[in-house]
Length: 120
Image 1 (cartoon, one colour):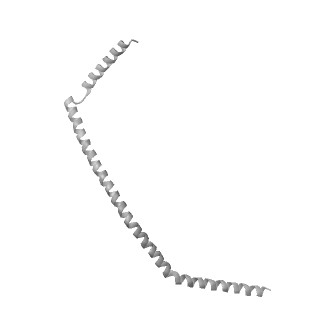
Image 2: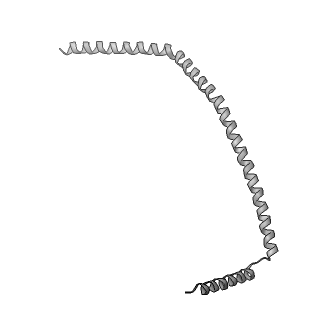
Image 3: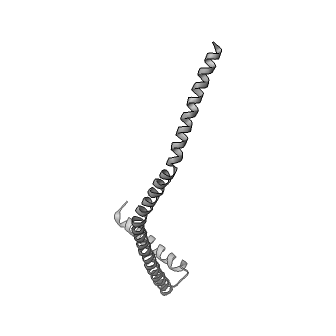
């Protein structure tokens, strides 16, 4: 195939495609340009709105991070203090229960020894 025949076919196809597009387009050229311009300005507005919202989100995250850095250590200290206070308040009960358990174990050992003596 010769290059000149190829380029003639390419040019004819391009002209046919251009004519087809011009006749099948629902809008005139000026209407299409106006539509594209309006869509472009709408997109610019939407992008600006998204940018503002992203900036607000970044600021909110920064504020939340700052508050968390200040609040969490205070809360942890409060919880530690509460646990220490609870341990101190239950210490006497724990000691009393340990003594009672030791007494019960001693009583069981005595019963076992008495039972073993009676079995002999």
